[in-house]
Image 1 (cartoon, helix red, strand yellow):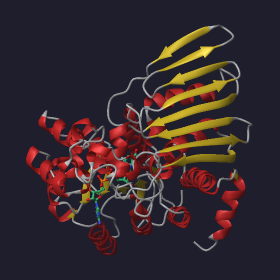
Image 2 (cartoon, rainbow, N blue to C red):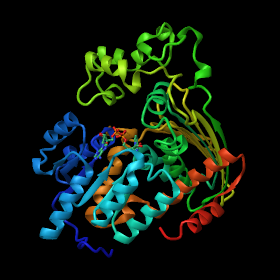
Image 3 (cartoon, rainbow, N blue to C red):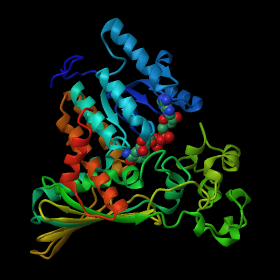
Image 4 (spheres, protein in one colour):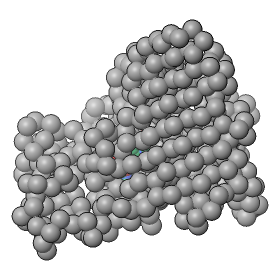
Amino acid sequence: MPHEFGSFAPSTEPLTLAIVGCGQRGRAYALYALEDPSACKIVAIAEPRPVTRKLMAETYSVDKTLVFDDWKDLLKASADTLQAIGKRLADAVIIAVQDQMHLEVTLAFAAQGYHILCEKPMATDIESLLKMEHAVKKAGIIFGMGHVLRYSPYSQAVTEVVRSGQLGPLINVVHIEPVGYFHFAHSYVRGSWAREAESSFSLLTKSCHDVDILCHWLAPGSPTRVSSFGSLQHFRKESKPPKAGAATRCLDCAHERDCAYSAKKIYLDPVASGELGWPAAILVDGVPDIENITGALKSGPYGRCAYECENDVCDNQVVNFEFSSGATVSFTMIANTQLICDRQTRLHFAFGELIGDMDTFTVTDFRTRKTTHHTPKNEGGGHGGGDMGLIRTFVRAVRTGQQEQLGTDVTDVLNSHLYVFAAEKARKEGVVVDCQKFVKEQRAKYPNV
Ligand SMILES: NC(=O)c1ccc[n+]([C@@H]2O[C@H](COP(=O)([O-])OP(=O)(O)OC[C@H]3O[C@@H](n4cnc5c(N)ncnc54)[C@H](O)[C@@H]3O)[C@@H](O)[C@H]2O)c1
């Protein structure tokens, strides 16, 4: 593969990685460097939160000259090194900052020739998506996307059944994403993805990887038409329980004990019983304890009444796709569930069906009347092993110079995002959208990116 910053000769040395944003996601991928130090090493980090930055630097023994408060400082140091000795600070960068920063960071690091693993969603508007595709192609770099669902042992085993053709053509898929009642309140009501203007619409921020894997299972067909309905039904002032009265924070609320979305139940009670990870860990810089979480609930965004936030993204949405093969897909994203992100999937083939829950699946063959049960081995980590599966695959792709190891490329990623935008247009305008026409129109609209 052509590359303006050097060759892709396979190396026996560990791949060097820079992490931009050491929040939940940056740290999840970094773990691979601890799991397999012979594969990769974290050599540089950028993170503004001091305690998080210090813990991260210590955990990965990052040289203090390569620990930065801001990604722009890391970029600058890299540019200086590039100029001085013709080498970047690292082989690849993991971009795990918030959604609206992906564009700027990707363009900057691609221009220096970094291979990039960018978190999902790729970007929050169509022009940015196209700019990113252009920059990645121009730089000739390996590009991975945080579509972790594709890389879990479960999804890969399901994909094998689909690709084998053993049950005949795939005719219909029913796929549900149960976001989880308190997860939704945490992330999409009180948290970073609550407002479309500050991140994006929830089908994109939450479900772009569902649309991606649905497209993956139905490939080589592609979506032809899409319709969608959805709204913000529950998490708004009109649904506020009367007993909550004028309270705007859970710690002052008379209804708190009876409320499903009580911030005390979501954050403080788990910390009191020793559960110090997500979601409480998001509220503070460093290790959560009763005192700092109480402080965060008194004055921070996560202590607000779930019916009194400025959130505006959908809490329920249905999307129907028709594919070029004639196959149909119905997808539902729903906030109010006990399950947290454990997708429920039914794949209906001509001669059988596959029913799965992201952990185990059954395959029934109508011809033999037999059902087999499958529990693909998951060695742990988030998203059923998908987080580790993705970073492992990305590192392998960069070390071998083979984008195809990732099973996707930047244009594929861009297209699946465009189908999400097509679905959102269908919802907002109450129309059925012609997906391929939509893709062509969007590309024509931004010819000079
Ligand atoms: N693939 C998935 O399944 C999945 C799941 C959750 C989130 N995400 C995506 O991953 C990304 C990160 O999400 P998260 O949950 O880790 O969020 P987070 O807020 O925990 O992490 C973002 C980090 O970026 C840091 N940051 C902010 N400004 C910075 C700057 N100028 N320079 C360097 N670092 C900076 C923040 O301090 C924070 O630590 C988002 O785009 C999100 O949508 C993907």
